[in-house]
Structures are given as structure tokens and as C-alpha cells.
Amino acid sequence: MMSERVVRLAEVTRVHGEGPQAVRALDGVSLEVAAGELVAVMGPSGSGKSTLLNIAGGLDRPTSGTVAVEGAELGTLSAKALARLRRRHVGYVFQDLNLIPSLTAEENVMLPRELDGVAARQARREAREVLDEVGVPGAGGRFPDELSGGQRQRVAIARALVGERRLLLADEPTGALDTAAGEEILALLRARCDAGAAVLLVTHEPRHAAWADKVIFLRDGAVADRTDEGADELRTRSGGAR
Ligand SMILES: Nc1ncnc2c1ncn2[C@@H]1O[C@H](COP(=O)(O)OP(=O)(O)OP(=O)(O)O)[C@@H](O)[C@H]1O
Image: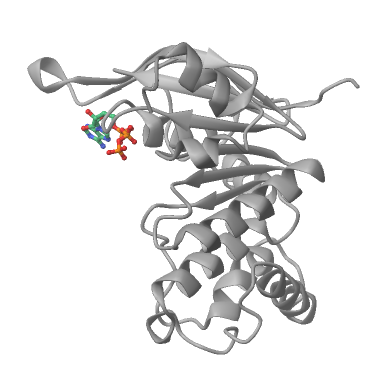
């Protein structure tokens, strides 16, 4: 099967700050994720995982190198075109979730669709479907602070999934969940992937990386190791390092 590339990073370097304070968060990283592919990103704290995800989704720009999403090179887009591309094609699950506290769960999930010009009725219908899919069907009318940590996490995932986005970026999306619930979320991401999404997943858990088609291991902003066959091969090759 011809694989269709959804995101491509070529020789991406990102330096945060300037002068003696400068931190090279990414250093010459190249990476592609195709439709139907789940790529796990692993590595110690500070190795550049979140920076990689932010750059892949156009939330941050590389200092050098290029990023293309659905064939569009992000560096060549106007701010408006970039915002539109992000809304249409990219779903994010952030470490800190970023739900809007004054909106109900359902309204949080509707928001990106409404910003995209989808009518409220349809956005609401889509939001309900996806809240159902992530396993919080009754939570739609409640506000984030009325939900448990695990429920909030599922709502944040629903917001990323709504609208059939082709690129899903998830930074430790199972942080607030117990093992069984975490596995459910991974199964959900895997299913979206099998339905044609490209997924980039930051995780510390080899158990989660085992759902991946490929694992990228970052160290000091560079790709220290990569496998084509998920976490099992990585564990074998790196002598058990996580
Ligand atoms: N906005 C910023 N300004 C300055 N330095 C930054 C900024 N963002 C990240 N860094 C630095 O860049 C490096 C990579 O950070 P990043 O958050 O990408 O790592 P990470 O692998 O996601 O870490 P963690 O697992 O702890 O989330 C770190 O040294 C970090 O301190």
C-alpha cells in the first residue's frame, strides 16, 4: 500500500533563547508520519519531545529546517493560513489539557468545529458522538472543574479527535488515567490511526509505545535511536532503556 505522508520534518533545529542561555531543544531532527501510522516519541525529560510535537503541529517554528503538514510547508504560510491548517488538520492533546473552564465539556469539544465555520447544531452532534467514543457520554453538560481528572483527560482527547483531523499530536495523553483507562485511550488513538490518521505520541511508557508502528528515541534534541517495529524491538536493542 502506498503510504501517504501527513507530516514531514526535515533537519529541524530549534534553539530556545539566545547567547549563553541558548538551549538547543532539537538538533537536526528528520521525521515523517504517514496516514495510518502511529509513531511514539520517547526520551528523558528535557530531550525535546514537547518541542518536537509543538513544531510538528505548527505551534512553534524551527530555528532551521522545514516542516510540512498535508503537503503545505508551514514556513511559507501566512499566520491566517497556518491557523486554518492547524484547526482543520491538527488535533492536540496537551500535557496540561488546556480545557476552557467557563465552557462545558461539550462546548469545549464544539469550539474548534465552530471556529471552522461548522453550524452549532452539527458541531454539537459531532461533539456528542466523540464524547461517546472516548467514554464520557454523560459528561457533556458539565464544566471541567466538575469532572474527575480522567474525565477531563478524555474530554481533551475528544476535542482533538473531533472533525476527523488527520494529524493527532498527543503529549502524554494518559497522564491522569489508571492503567486500564490509559490502554483504552491508546486503543482509541490506534483506531483513529487505522482509520487514516497520522499520530505522534509522546510517552514514557514502553507499554504504550508497544501500540506504535515506530518508536523515535530522543536524547539531547537528537534522534538517538529509532525502530520500525514498536517498543519491543527498542527495548531489545537499547538493553532495556525506557
Ligand atoms: N520556551 C522555552 N524557552 C527556553 N527553553 C525551553 C523552552 N521550551 C523548552 N525549553 C528547553 O528545551 C529543552 C527541551 O524541552 P522539551 O520540553 O521539549 O523536552 P521534553 O522532552 O518534552 O521534556 P519533558 O519530558 O520534561 O516534558 C529543555 O532543556 C527545556 O528546558
